[in-house]
Length: 65
Image (cartoon, rainbow, N blue to C red; front, side, top):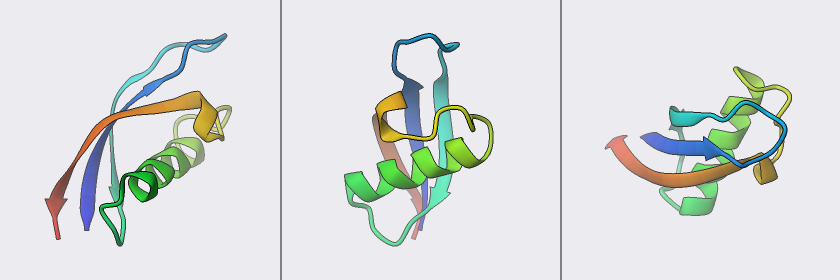
């Protein structure tokens, strides 16, 4: 399923980010969705923020099953 995840970066020495990322997941479990979003952000736009500690999930919505 395709899920849109609203994310923001945690406070720190980095420029702050707030926005969404779309990820494909097998489950709508919040932990699974959050992990997929962090992985996509760290592989694409934010390679300097590879871990879960750098991010917070505000919300998510299933776009399609």
